[in-house]
Length: 163
Image 1 (cartoon, rainbow, N blue to C red):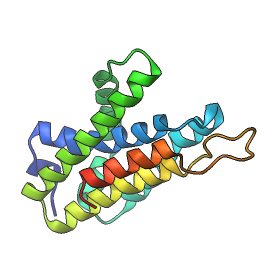
Image 2 (image 1 turned 90 degrees about the vertical axis):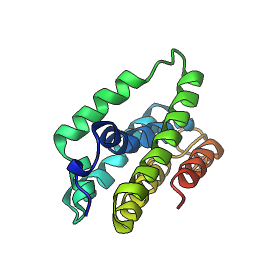
Image 3 (image 1 turned 60 degrees about the vertical axis):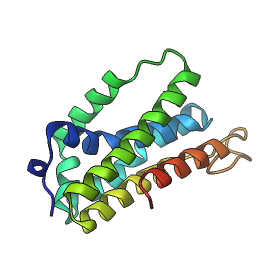
Image 4 (image 1 turned 120 degrees about the vertical axis):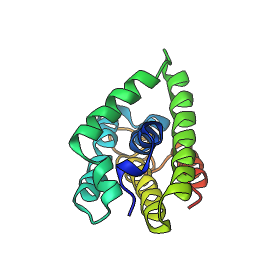
């Protein structure tokens, strides 16, 4: 099993930060309103808690409290967009790039089991975020669980990690 010490600091940051970029890219892709956005913001938490308690050492390390805090700081420092449209595009590009880079790093330095587990983790975070709240509609009526824009981001992430 791969551990943090198997990676350079830059590689580790990519592995650590990718899940956060994925969650934010999906959350900002839809138009779920303020309450839906709150639900989408908390949706990845269950996948993170599950991974933190799981048997995969790599995911446990990535989901360590200190690593989560460091990832949040890194994400904040990576975003330069000033408006929502630019933010969406920037987050989607960053998420896709980080997911692809993480997948490549794991192919080179980890077992296939670690790579598969990590890629599944990224997709799970994306799906949980997309399914957390209805998009569109009015006061909870109508709308759809996963919007066209969220589906596009899910597809980009899935392709990036080759799932």
